[in-house]
Image (tube, rainbow, N blue to C red; front, side):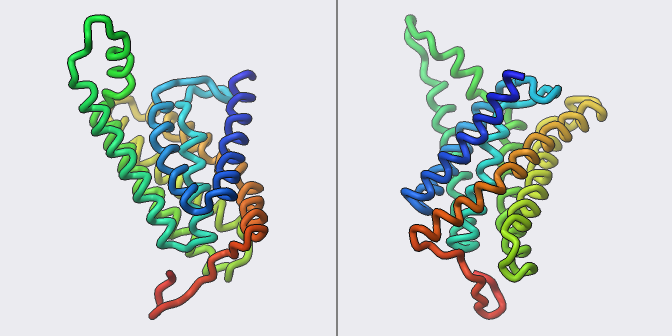
Length: 239
């Protein structure tokens, strides 16, 4: 049970930090948080752990909280700013991969001890990198679109509904795209399906548990005088 307790505490800590960053630094803080989380979760994803009886990667908490961050941007700053946050996260991850690949091409000194472990961490296989990047873009842009779709359908009511529906579907898109690119043909079909469902199950839990935090974000925003972004129609398009 130790891993499960640590996982839940890590989730609460991560979402709480996101709220504090939003409160003190507003959208600029959320932009920074998205960039930081996408980099760190792609390092954590290398580590396999046992959670709830499944073998899973460790990066699912931080990756799941990115959807929470983009939902905050959507709710209080609109679709354009949410998409900007997604794009900044993508750029941050690409730059990290490029910079670390350059670093690994430097010949280490005779007494260096870090080159081998750094190589093991940052020498990602091309399929893993491509799967991660494409899954991130597809799922995050869908999340922004779906959040605003459900806000329009519910006429701005039921924050919990648009938060969960947009995120849970987007999480499945993310898991499906990543597993198709990274693992299709690597494992037999039953194993591949097991990886897909396990990955999505943990992300689904993150999406479910972040619901009270999105309401806390609304409380903090109103306290600071930040009102939820109203749906403004400009020539038939929501902005």
